[in-house]
Image (cartoon, rainbow, N blue to C red; front, side, top):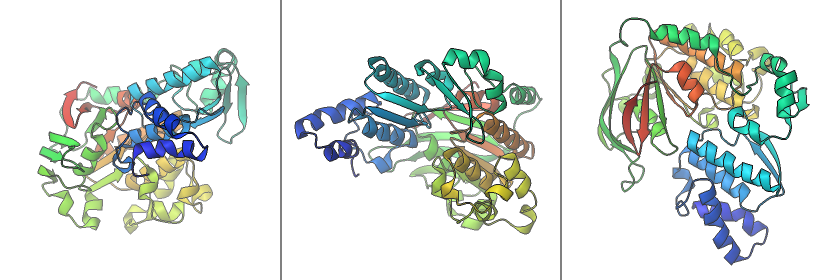
Length: 388
């Protein structure tokens, strides 16, 4: 819809709610998901996390008796995820709806569950029991299948990155420079404000901040997908927004928050090989196997028929097949189990060791801890550096 309030009201209209009740309910449920005052905002101009909240508002508005939520905290900032889970907790405590929650963010979801169903990679049940019984009797099998349990970390990858952080020396010479850049889709509402930063060769940089803080926009400015309203961006000394598409693709890669935005081919094999030179094809099969998308099994499938987590890994594979100067990944770990995160981190480390700078815009604190050498926090479009 053209306005957020219309999106939320759509389900209510189809259920024949009286107009006065709809007018009261819409702002109430928008506030419940952290979008108070967004009634007349255009959904297409919201960040990915804000769009996720809006979709949830539309689902919650009619007060359904059965509520099925598939990865509801994906792309939400930590505060938004906690607020959402608190709201789901209120519904659970009131027993006003049956809730089915599909979620990798078990730290927040675990306490809400009466029962936990753990599924293996083949979709077969590993266990169905209370949360306490799962931890007491089935933890080893669930971890072996790659699923998260409360308190899990990535010790093997964490150890590699911590050792790497102790190496002497700074990142290489700056290959990307952002100098006092500002940008807004609407001149009255700037999204990035007076941003300046330098990124060195072989650097691991995390961009963190609340939904709508400007992380995705800054990432797109960095690789020339957007042109700044003021200030300058330089990628290896050149303006990326003015480079021909082929040359830009050799210098930079970008994985969109919504993987479907970047798919162009009708099969997984065509998608991952699209635009590659003959010398770049050699490692594709190995890369896809490491990302648990072996071409023997997935090559002929449509990218649009994959699960959300599989689409995420395919979109990353499409940029990880190359060795550009800069890779920008927007929410690289959403929908990923532990095995998926391990594979992504391992491959990213190889690209960094070869000199590529990798920038990740993410809300995943576990990934930031295992990945980042430097962390930039965005707030209201402004950039500030914090310690990882």
